Image (cartoon, rainbow, N blue to C red):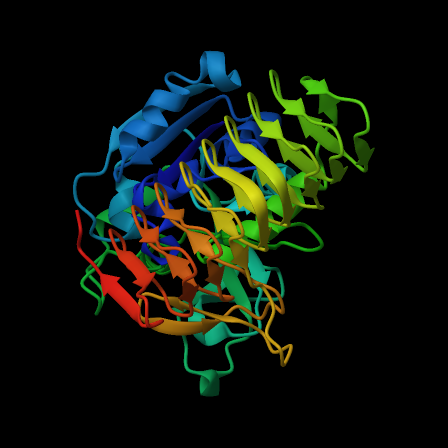
Length: 430
């Protein structure tokens, strides 16, 4: 069976992380999100994948190439040149699919590979035109909600329904299997009130006008995340690290303490006095220590330096340096970041309330008691900088010595305190 992955979006809600890379290429537990997905599809019996690319597509193509050498499965590409909705995006796969059945999914999803196996098995077991994966949600007004009959067949699909309609709480999970007649339904799809060709409308047409039969498959007791918000990356990383295969390929000096599941990459060095509590992943050519403290669920990329500092439940992307008396917890530090000595990240409110983060101009409740900073690529701090919880620092920004960051910092900015303790902001420095 073939698979189609929609991976053309800009991932605006994840900025500044996606300012320098497409969302599917965000690294988690040693591999890009998309690689985890492709390997799971391969294990589920998929033999050819089409990735529909767009935003920063070179990063995807340069990494996977034809797929054979990298992941052992053939990968093809097509560039989405217009963005007119999910049905429009799916239609790019028509010539790839031809007359075959295919699995379709969004490229920002991380899911237990058993879900792929289950949905393919369900599709093959019954004479169906499609299967849609579903999740139960607490806030159905924010999702496409699916109404099923007693035989688990889809009756209606309603985008973000009013709560008063009581349409249930089974939400579209963004993973499907279809016969190629879905493309006939896409041809009949009209633009929605948002001015887009909605794939949910295409499915409704397949049912109502083409007499298609689509069954729902409810994901139960298996991991699923659509990774639309920064802290969901921490959850996804935790899921992957809980399944980490341990390996020590680098050099470990004397007087180092390891416990739990740990991966240390080739040409990395763990220096004396360091304590690492797994599960943790440390990439290649990375220096950790001396006297570093790496706590559970930390992912540290390639070519990094973690010195006499403490890292906890955080993502540290490649080529970043956290060398001297730093604390980073529950945070995402993008590539090529340098923290000055004594830089500390707050990850907890005094009142223990959940932390909010500003996403596309709106404060969103993370529902997390602990959440630190999201720091964009190529940024740096001076000595003794303090960063309050739930803040974002844009890419290419500089934070001067002794500065307290209690608000989001835009990209290409310089923030520092003058001799009188006043915060000076200079933005748009590029």
